[in-house]
Length: 157
Image (cartoon, rainbow, N blue to C red; front, side, top):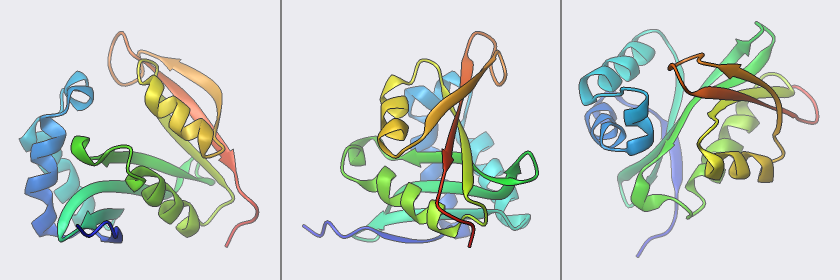
């Protein structure tokens, strides 16, 4: 089995498969993601020049990360979305995607939001050096708080 993970820009051909597994994932379902809505979100992102990368192993896309260069306070990098195919979790894919995105960030500060109920993701981000710096109740979905995580890197590129 080939364990090598490669990361490349998202292609339009990747969208249907990603949208399928995202829509089938319980976490994304709590945010009312459907196959159609997520496919539209990724397609619109591509059309508008968004910085979205995918991780693939053995020619199968197993994760993605969406980086917004100045998406936090019009100053700092923001990880808008990250997802790893459920069967590929705990294999270093998320870490590889985060490190890839961080290396391309144009600022030393990086922000992201994580659901209050997603304790595994919170622990993952903490292991990568992120710290919770705030909380937004009912920000995206009623009844779910988004925790604001922040990481200060060494210096901007």
